[in-house]
Length: 340
Image (cartoon, rainbow, N blue to C red; front, side, top):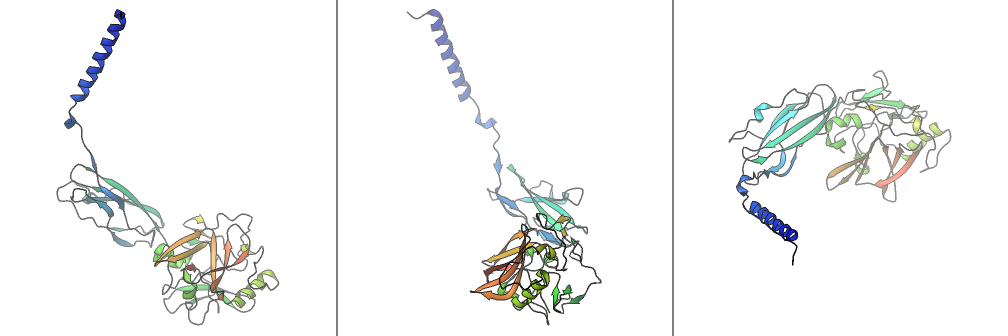
């Protein structure tokens, strides 16, 4: 016969379980608030780099209302004290999605925040774009270049841009800056203001005819003559110039950040006033360029080729050598230093 205490325990458990079931079944689903979210990912098509005081209009992309309703936006630029309140009022007739803004006159990196919202129960979403205001003038955002306004210079008649140059022991004049002619090639991150800062990136085919009138893309002989001046003896074609990269590199900064920041075991002297800066390279595929190697590589085309590959010279931040490289003529994009 079951013990009385045990029987009472089972009765208690049964009643307790039944009570739980009653509570669950009696819960009113209508008491719960149901939340909804906008579809997609909010994005702002804002350039990474802009000239001071530039004005542009941006339209947010990527977000839709699942129920077909309208989506409104308001914006908060970091260079002003408050949000654009004309965009922030909740209303049945939501405002236009475009936004016109002017970046500051002072160089630096700023943010533009966008909030998407609706007039109903849908949750909003937020994104933030970063934009750097860049001064492209001599020793502006790119500083410590070693170039002074009194140094030898000439003006490209095609676009009025000024270039400074050095004259080597062979009487050849070499540009001290990367060519910035925008009639060919691409600018860094497709931002035109960066053309006069980093120079343009060109394919080998583009580089053949891109230099100003009277100037030309360095031949292999031109590079070897420069190498002889630096090394003291004539280097062989395609050889690596050992332990001299620092004599061509300049300890420049961009927006206050050291460009050759990872150079280890290399003493940067810019002894020959070449002014190499690590703007990397680009690869062009399907009409779009991707950029790599900034703060790591300086790459310069030669007019020569080898087995259908274009020849270029490059400096790697982890080495004190100047190395010969070979790349696809149609897709690889490097800097250009013209000579005369």
